[in-house]
Length: 148
Image (cartoon, rainbow, N blue to C red):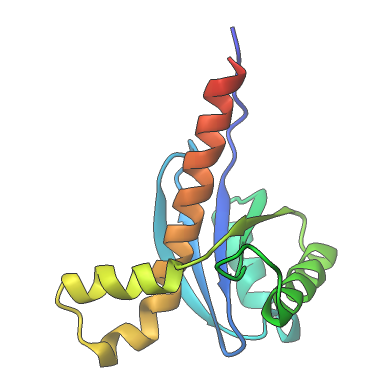
């Protein structure tokens, strides 16, 4: 019998001014929006450290803003540098996950739910982080199924 280790993760949509944060359930199946933190996180890691401790997280899933062709541009370098700085000071694993179109999808979902553009501005990063984390959880579960 295959025993799956339970992983609780935070998803991060790292921007220059704001960082959207989402959290997985204890079974690593469902992502939920959690917070929007001021960026850059490396300037003050304490709010993220509190979330890591409160949620008992062992993994950060960081969205990589790849180009539509899958190439890494200047924004990816900034995100990687920020994530590496976090990895040095937090007791968690850091994994990267493709975030292409997550912000566009977050805006689409929120607009469909009737959220005004003004109100979306403050929480689109958190919803994008949720989309990134859910995509990561789904792909991890699919890989697990292939391995069994």
